[in-house]
Length: 192
Image (cartoon, rainbow, N blue to C red; front, side, top):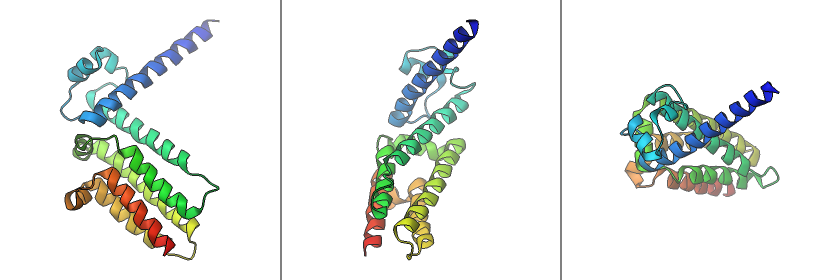
């Protein structure tokens, strides 16, 4: 009986932590995180600093936990949109458009802070590398005779340029719009 009580408390604590991560994620996506201290976050979320420290032991670790949660959830949702029965070419476009959709809520401040904070930048880079490999695999499925490695490499270069802010600087497209444009470009190339 006591075990159930301990399990229930742990489950409730886990749910509260996840809800707090959700709220922090909304703030980060909207305002970024570089300029926000723990006291600022506590004021915005109307909670105590000790409540925030239930997410992680330091401000930096809180940021990493929230950024990691954002990309983990985004990856799960992106993968969930892929319909195994769909035309493989449509799957490539759907995958990149889903990335675009997931990045759409993020503000320029969020992306600037991702780039400026090395641990967060590394999380974004790791997710981008995963997406590059995924695109290569999807292109290979869609067009086995095409040079999937080349298309994947090109996609990877563009995705890295998106990540570094170069596409935005050169075209004005934010990350979300750039992924949507990349999807159109790759799908059009495969249909040619």
